[in-house]
Length: 320
Image (tube, rainbow, N blue to C red; front, side, top):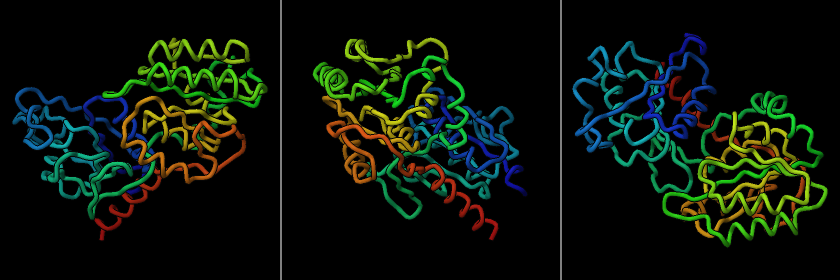
């Protein structure tokens, strides 16, 4: 079987972030990728990730999301997918299985579990990296550099990509942090730099308002939320990147580029991310935003390929 012929399933409960991480690894492996969505109902969902799946979802049922013929590789992420990966592995022991992030239980059916550095889970089949899997490659960035709104292509260099997060589940970005970031943009960002801004769904209005006001006196462009997000185009065109510290996925994305990265810390963000950021700051051209901005080039941090390599090794071992 060639790489192009191998069959890969992605088990997903529909969360875009989890699904994209799975796709990132699957695309590196190559092959025929199929997304299998799972949607456990009550009472089965209450027992996830520890309990069984509904009888109608078992692999021997024709309408099951994990009905055969079975794949060569299965990649899952999200608490609701754990029981399905476990059932799939029982039905098809030869399928090489990967679970992304902590499954919160031990009986997973996963040959390999990946977790970020800040998670506590460790073990013989657990792989740990500083950044997470993503869909960014040099080829993706090259393509993105030729697309996106014309306005960002016309911005004079050097260009800064400002990647805004916002509130998390338990923490608020904070009005004081918004003012700190705005003050930096207005008073400390070198005057010759133009700025491209992409907010996220979590960006609070007060943060975007502060940033907008701070950039009025310089050349800039802010995505208004209409049409496709030119996120990748901004990353590909950036001479340097500022990213807020509240999202491990955003950090992983920007660190997959060759641009210098500057991390802005909100008033509050998950404590576990601070553990990872402490390690990231040891990398070349990765700084907190209290440092003077530089342009230049650094080696991208690409954990996606490391995860894919480990799966390739498992596949070879399976073949014996």
